[in-house]
Length: 261
Image (cartoon, rainbow, N blue to C red; front, side, top):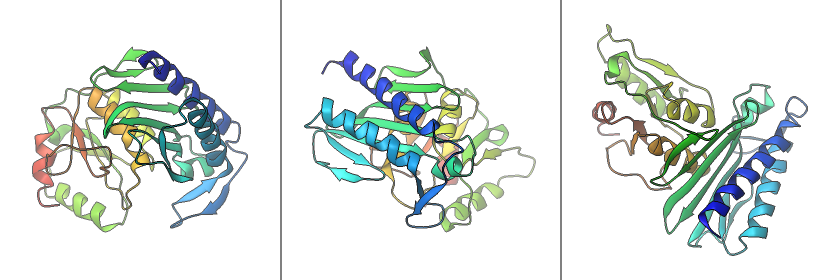
């Protein structure tokens, strides 16, 4: 399939899945819980996933898939789809409008395409490797902030130890600083904020290795102009879930703060 066909396939499929989930918003609650109370599934997750998986298997029968709810199918294939059919499920279940659908296509170990759709706002983010990131068809650019001490970033706060360790490092920055942080319990909205330049940096701190939460986001953030690396400043691959994303001026500063983690 040609590049243009893949682009159209992603947009068509992700919007169909997201709009199907939207029909259930406010109508369904948690269907079942997985690893912990924050890891939940609704009927909307399953409806969205079925639409996406059916479309991929019909159009790309030889491609592999890793999807949050159904797991792996031919995951060793050169072309691999990574799907989060409903990112922010707990938000969805509690009638909080911070949720959406995520799709990424990895080819020969490199994320080539990534997309996010937020049905509540009809916001569609799309990126291709080395071709930029777009929001509803318009090119996006990350923040040009240069001073971390006056920045506004995204950091998912909770009582988990890694998050506490990182937050404690930021508290050691001189108190005259005015670093603000947002926590939204999803990846789709912070990705939108970073890509649009409304937030200056992101540090991800998941406890579990859920690559479907991050494959599309990393590409979108990088293609908006950010440097995206592991905490130690080394390059990411599509499996990484702990990373820093910031413009080239800010990026070295959190790398220094997170040394040793």
